Length: 221
Length: 221
Image (cartoon, rainbow over all chains, first blue to last red):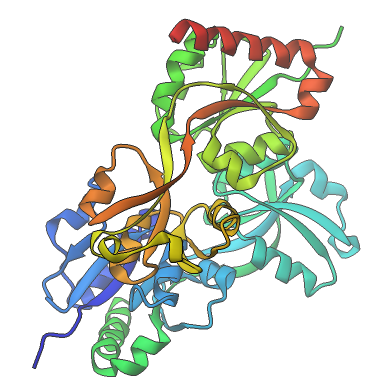
């Protein structure tokens, strides 16, 4: 039997990666040593299993790689999944890591007199324009979104947009910028995601990994 | 006379920043010490001139902050300016830094038999979907673009898209991924950009800085 193409697992750079490591261990995945240095520019990494290769990409790109089948599996927050809303992604397991929330926030001074029930149009700076527009449209509010890729919390003080929709974890970034939470759009955790076609055509390989991650999550609980 | 609002200058994080520093010096701008550490999470920085404040944001966001008047001036590559095509931005000075080019590249093996004059539809992974679509549409080619925020060079080998449109500087990243350049979409350098309204309403302040940057570029040549 010819060796089949390895399974590609897309993992996000940055913040979440530290929380992912114990789960990899629990699932029996030992990445090559290079993987543990965020400094090197390598993007693909071998593991102890010749049938599994890791790629390390930005958290927003994990969903895209998996949706198009360039990676078979990945780990992505449901903030990213909501924003792209790819039908090709199946997200079977809540990994219980990367917990935070997607919030609308505004300057403290504005909140004192603000009445969200009277909003008809709001302007928002955000990394999540699709999610924000959809969320507020469902309440009859038109959200004009200015897409930023970072430093969202600067937007209100510089007059880019009065309000922001952004991930909040401890709330210290908001506080440091004189902003307060007004509404939670969604609670966020990271999920194991799978390309639907890969799951159907390689049920043994992909399904096997899903099972092992499931166990790793159970053991970590 | 009341002190007027400071002028905000938006500078890009990362690669370009090192090349920006001599120009700041030439223009007489001395940022506070914190500015020189990319590690701290501060986003706004005082300078030796109480009338000038620096904000440090992602290169793709510099144009957005300036277009909406949240920053009065900024430094942005014309790759970013083309991609957003904001009418509110005036880009008076080519700073002659950050030189690279926006290229279409594809796997070496594909190029051997490929004939770009016969393309009618191509699939491209890129950070620059608007620019790529526009460029190829003008030649009668439909470019289906998959937006990624990084690791573009992985796309062909993983089957996400056969071709990529990305910034190329030395070409070593392409080479390391078995990719070769097919076409240059544009030559890229960084420009001083200015919010048109700020330039009109504060000609003395904003125009003064434009003049000082102009001199700094001349002196650096």
